[in-house]
Image 1 (cartoon, each protein chain N blue to C red):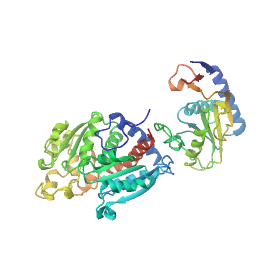
Image 2 (image 1 turned 45 degrees about the vertical axis):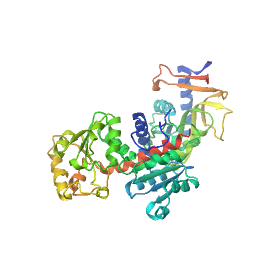
Image 3 (image 1 turned 180 degrees about the vertical axis):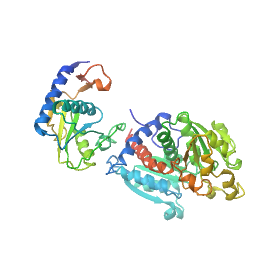
Image 4 (image 1 turned 60 degrees about the horizontal axis):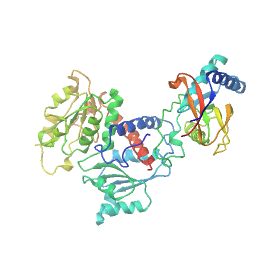
Length: 180
Length: 308
């Protein structure tokens, strides 16, 4: 199996730092801003970014986790139902500037489901999308990210494997691998 | 991955501990959903579910209907009292006619034991048993065990006494299967005439004295006397029954530890439970009802999602 490293620990750190600077540039005071990490893996990135922003801008931005399972459009179209994770939105979405965070942007279907899931909690004033890896030319829907860690050209037969310390791995590493 | 071992939920007897745990984990997420400002998710929006009730029901039917609507399913209701069943149609014909209208799932309650099992052999839709005669009532057992897990942290190793009319209770049988699969110890307690003859062969303890049962258990699941199923007299009078088997607050206060009181409803206040016991702080009777919706959402979601 071919395995290509996209991010090692250092590069991930630098990239997250750059994404945070971009967020600061666009939001300055973060007064009305909340972060929503998408389950299952976006939540770890959301936490890392929230910590970094706290260090850089001294602002404690509210963070929530959003599970999109029940809003997916592939229910009953796959063999087994997807397993749901926890949704935790400890603030009001109504009128907020929301930054959705996920690890990989692929077909865009998860993001579509996330928009639906989020709107069930209220009407945000603005929604932005931050992803670490943007798989170019793979979208099924007209969705693009506002903040991108890295654009990666991939084949359909490949998969992005995310290993983060927060998930229990030794190092933060993100790979591009061939599906078996 | 995460899927049930069965296409239907006919009873607890033929599902596994893993199935039960998967249903509980899914119910956890649905419990969060039904406490949101917008309680509806679109998962089952292209699924049609028929609720077919050949027997009366308030809680179960409402609970199923709410669960279905909160999953965005299309719902049709049918009750035998207002239908052509009275004109002599067979069960299979009735259900096939409903299925011809393109229904994907059937939730059925029937007075005959095994009615949903019979149907499952003849039709394609997923079937959820909402109670068949005196046999099983799987979703009730699941929500009971789920409520115990919620209140006490887990079911494993807990002692649960089921008290009352065991003979006519489908809740009792499903509860015994569910609790044993999850590693709890189960005792049944009631007048000897209302205990099935060979109940101890299921591996449950049998106790005739309700005070001893209460002292033994962590959870008391109190059942109603099902007068409508009793063709002969099993005890002299309701008054005498409540004298010997009724549970009141004083009995609970005299115990060394606080036990959890459960009841599947409908309660006959003053017969099996006095009002002060039913409304006591240790009673989880209304939590059971809330959990019922989450459990039923989980069951419907998992059954509808398994297409293979």
